[in-house]
Length: 218
Image 1 (cartoon, rainbow, N blue to C red):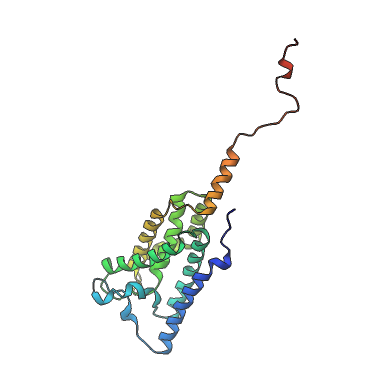
Image 2 (cartoon, rainbow, N blue to C red; image 1 turned 180 degrees about the vertical axis):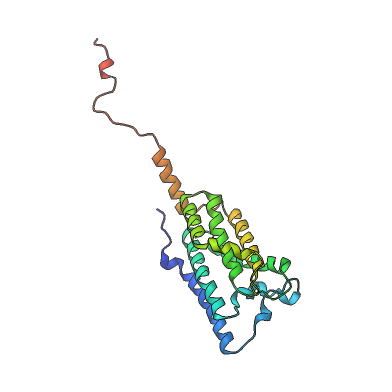
């Protein structure tokens, strides 16, 4: 019998990651460090380190807080509903978003976890499209309801916002959702089993044989 991942289990990794992100920023602020140069700097060798470091770096507490809630929520949802691939999905989106920003974005320093956030949101939405599983589709609807306003973030606009990170993260999320769409979660198997059982023909039981009155006397 399938054991569902509990909420307590699901939030463990997101809490650790988000907590570490806050720790980095607090150390930065208390030490008056300028770590922006460790962000992604496209097509510069010294900017490669930002692929790993930039999601941990934020320009202000407001910037950090704006990424914390959606990042924690998306990570938790993925840990709950896509537990088989959750960590692979997270780190693939994390790395590929940084790589694509390094390859294609404007030659300025890009910092913050918003690209990863867009990647995770995109992954959850498109997983519903690709998998067509009831739970996955419901999650997609929830994502549309919660984060439809994020669509504007993939277009050039507000100064100081890395819209490229948003756009590229979203595209990476689609790619990752497609690549793992055939990795069936245990709850998906359980749902399919229930559907098959429901679709089986129902055999009615009768007290007498159905053709009893059609039989001729010998």
